[in-house]
Length: 332
Image 1 (cartoon, rainbow, N blue to C red):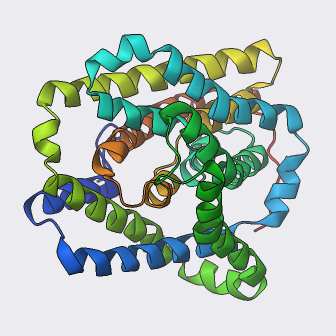
Image 2: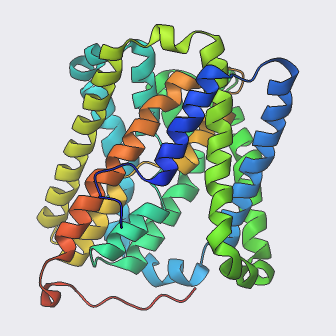
């Protein structure tokens, strides 16, 4: 029996379990230091595997559709931050100031890769373009997110300059990614054979960061600082933000004359924010700081976007077959 689309997936339930574990048994002292090293190693491995899995053929197949990519790019790194700033007088009173910093942080993040492509495929959109846009968003986000964080939050990582933050991101995330791309020719076949369990590397690295972040936050009194009305307000903030972006990306796709397959790609690639990238980036950008409040909005937004976009993708998929544009075959 399949799980209803509106219910949390297994990974989200595991994520909630890790938050509960950190709340009851937080990691501290020398154990926290060792756990931090383990987490950094897991993040490096995560981005190495992302580099090894990324298909250059797929990127080339979708790269020529520059108008679509430019619009998705503008929504991810322009529309989201703009809404976060413009709506602050309306939305900030619903949450605590620290939680709204987390909202601004998620606005600065790149788009998801896996779910954006999966929903585009389910909805019969332009899959090659989705692959290209999502992959480019993750890559450019390594450089743009620290700049946007400095602009939106008025901070520069753990106290250094923005260039220092970009340097840390480059060293800890981009270099493993490039190494994975170089090793792709030797590892791709092995990765394809073992992808059913390698997904746990992605999920495991996120769970490690979340446990460490919430352990530190709980020790500092996180749940005493976040009242229940603020949590309810945060859910409302995430729903409003996602709803506006979905409406605007759909309207822009139509207004600029894209066909429906491209409109679908714009909606699903332009409305996403990446938990898989955002959590490790927070670990790097805000090293030494408390991450619990910062990533809590991202965790909620992640689940809400999955539930809403699953319903939306199935609605698109029910349209007549003749409405869908033919999709190019993408080589691995």
